[in-house]
Amino acid sequence: MALVLYNSLSRRKETFEPLDPKRVRIYVCGPTVYDRAHIGNARAVVVFDVLYRLLRDTFGAEHVRYVRNITDIDDKIIAASRESGEPIASLTERMTCLFHDDMASLGALPPDEEPRATKCVEEMKAMIARLLEKGCAYVADGHVLFAVAAAPHYGELSKKSRAELIDGARVEVAPYKRDPADFVLWKPSTPDLPGWDSPWGRGRPGWHIECSAMSEAYLGDTFDIHGGGVDLIFPHHENELAQSTCAHEGRPFARFWVHNGFLTADGRKMSKSLGNIRTVRELLDEDLNPGLRRGGEAIRLALLSTHYREPLDWTQEKLRQAHTSLFRFYAALARGRRPQASDAASGPSEVRDALDDDLNTPLALARLHELATSVNRLHEEDRYDERERAQTLLLAGGQLMGLLGSDPEEWLRGAQRGDAVLVDQLIADRAAARKTRNFAAADKIRARLLDLEIVLEDHPDGTTTWRRKM
RNA sequence: GGCCGGAUGGCAGAGUGGUGAUGCAGAGGACUGCAAAUCCUCGUACAGCGGUUCGAUUCCGCUUCCGGCCUCCA
Image 1 (cartoon, chains in turn cyan, green):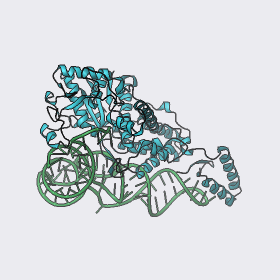
Image 2 (tube, chains in turn orange, cyan):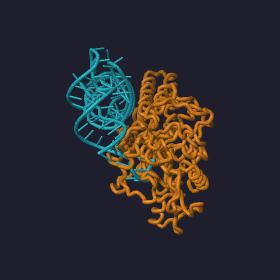
Image 3 (tube, chains in turn red, orange):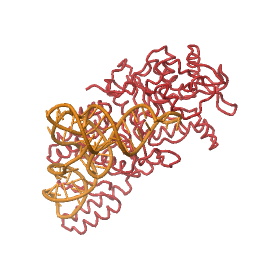
Image 4 (spheres, chains in turn brown, green):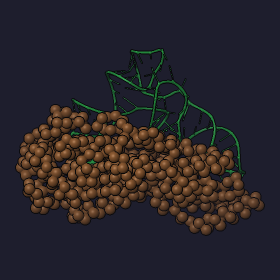
């Protein structure tokens, strides 16, 4: 089955065929580094990480180029720096590192390129100059503005008509704009603000030009997929599309626009005023299994348990259920001898098919659960060869989604808070007690270990294993 | 006000014009010295009202409710 993606531009699912299968190109809007990543930021990163993995799996890792920018110059950054007194360069550098840490703990692969806006100002200036040349932009009051009138298809991505845009305007229109919908390409900076010299005076770039310039620099005029959150469709992506298309003399920009749905926390939009912003760090810190860094995997699974285009309401219960699912998967993988990751070829077709259908991760996860059930049943029926095959499929399916990468036994045992040698000794003592049918002593050992949050599991073959209490 | 999206069993969450999602929780059974895990069985879910159809949760229309965007936001 071929990969099908919902294209926001056409508002329908389309079969994805890259322009050049040897060079699949995807651009995703990255973070503005002024604060720690929250769970909504994480959703976008994780969703496109799954797409990236799927593309790599389909076209070959060396044939996919994934670019995700870092916005390190922006009014929010300036404001944050002023508030805390931390210099901008230090703030953005620190937040970039923290972002990398957080995303790594969610199992997200780094993109192939991660350009920073401040390193691409020359490219932005060049593009602005081209837009001015072509008459798609004008200088007014120290600003360079994009003239929406020059973009005949303006509104085609967000499906907004010009009239609607004017009607809906809730913000006072700057007097120097020719058209209320015109937007800033370059704005003046005062001496105390970061700025770059330009033909239009010392200033800094507008937000939208950044992605247009960087996608052009790294992926060319036309590329395959442009991703981001739905909230970016307007105005950010609409403006990018207009700019790039004008700068490229009408040649197509992104062929597929892919947008992930919004995330709410306990039913409400996350906002500073409501105080319900959940950062990735904070969720990792309240790890369900302290000591072993694996909470990120449960967060990842929770984010993938809803289809990416649907709204997702983040709750503690959802995270708990994700953790329970992981337990089920790892317990199935831990039965008998563990399968090797290298066996994992391309992932089981049931999982592939689900992901190929517009990244249906909830269905793919359901398929993993079915595989886990079949592993367990085959194990009970002593059909070990078949069980191992099912385990390999389960592992491969999980890894296609960036899950199940830990050693199953380690995952189940969690942090070795107790001394593993001591646990083994106690298990041996208990086995001896059971042999003489001294069940009181045996149960005492079970209780003692349970106090240490260690659960013993007796198996039909007489062996006993242990794991951390869930 | 304009534009978009959604409403599925106790909860989460796929999907489909006519039998089964899947997981969690719950009930019963098997297994177990106890336990845990696991397996098996169990729920007359598709917001409301009309329409199309032999048949609609699935298609169309209307209503109600919820969310997002229109301003910085993933």
